[in-house]
Structures are given as structure tokens and as C-alpha cells.
Length: 165
Image 1: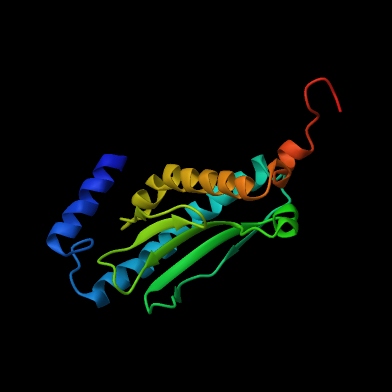
Image 2 (image 1 turned 120 degrees about the vertical axis):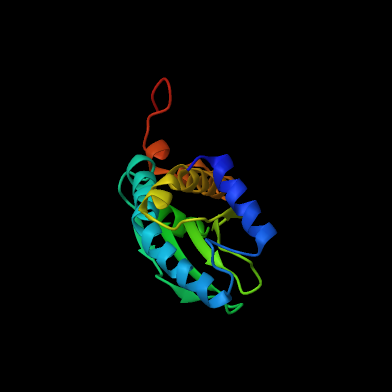
């Protein structure tokens, strides 16, 4: 699904008080549970790409599975940790799907990146989220480097600067 189509669906849901044709909180939570299962492989692929390309395979991907958030809503998170990140004391790269208690429908966010609509009802919708998840992960990596420094990223830290070391 192209970005503007996802936004139109999101805005129509806001207008209609629905999410994927569901109107009750119970039905929306059931759909969100299915969404989390559909998003798992795509979230893991996104973080694996970051791990391979930027962290030179030193990272570890962790997933919470579906949990109740502090506000009583539902959430699932996938995170990527690595030695330099832990030593720097900054948060991991995170992809978070959440359906907050006061929300009309679910959203995606990163550890340092804000909200994006989450309209996933089948495997194709989940696969269409790959560019969004890549953007969230890339923005998270950037913001974490901004909090620490470039040495957070092994692919850069181990690279010889122009003209040698």
C-alpha cells in the first residue's frame, strides 16, 4: 500500500470511528493481535538489515510479543541492542506497535521517533510497512548517534578514515 493510501485509510478510520471495519475496542484489539503476528517478520527483517549493514552483525534482536502497556492498551516491541550502544548508555533501536487505551486505532513508533499509522490486516499490508520500518529504524539510529557519537556504529568506527589512520 502506498503511503498516501495508508494515510487516507487512517483518516477515514478517524472520521468513521473504525479500524479495519471494526468499531468496538474488543474487535480492534483482536485485529491488533493479528497485526502484531503479521508484523513480526517484517520488523525482524528491518532490524536484521541494520544489524548486518551498520552493526556488522554484533547486535541482538529481541521481541516482547504482545503485552499490555502501562496505560492498559496493547503493545509489541522489537529492539536491537549492541555492545557500543549498551556502553554508551543509550536506548536500543526500537520498533513499537501500540494500541494505547485512549487511541482509536494502532500506531507504529521508534524509540526516538514519533507516531505513524498502523493499518495492517494481511501479509501484504505487513510487507508494505517495510519502507516505513526502515525509515523509523534509520531515524532511531541517527538519533542515537546524535545522543552519543559515530563510534556507536561499528561499520563506521572500524572503517579507516580517508588517508589512513
